[in-house]
Image (cartoon, rainbow, N blue to C red; front, side):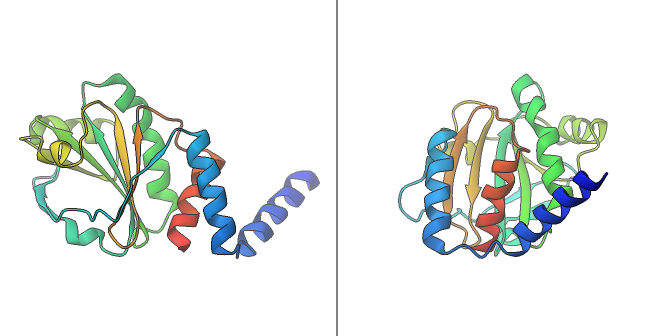
Length: 182
């Protein structure tokens, strides 16, 4: 019990004193992205503004993402690797402040009803958007599933991550915390 308490205190202190210089954070990000085959998007390509129906039938405006780090995941309800990683995204929804970090899933060419049923069955609380023509997939060059784009607080597309990952790891948590702090 004492060991658990000591570890918890040390982790808490480390997170409270995580005032690394930007150069140190950038070096860590560079090492992490290389090790995890995360491709940095060159330039400062902005998130293209869009309005799209969500899984509840409401119109979602991308302006809701302004000032937030966004994990934009492209998935399909019939895709086993996509289904495997979605529970890990739900953990981030619960862990991070929604005013600083958002998980948005984008489904192409399936009906609102099908996606709504899927989201309800798995009790996901993040937003799933319906892209009936695959416009966002085309806009961002997504040609396989799953795929994820990380967008910074300024709305700039920073990283593309193809394929399935173990997302809820200490390293990814640190990755997102650094992006939120920047």
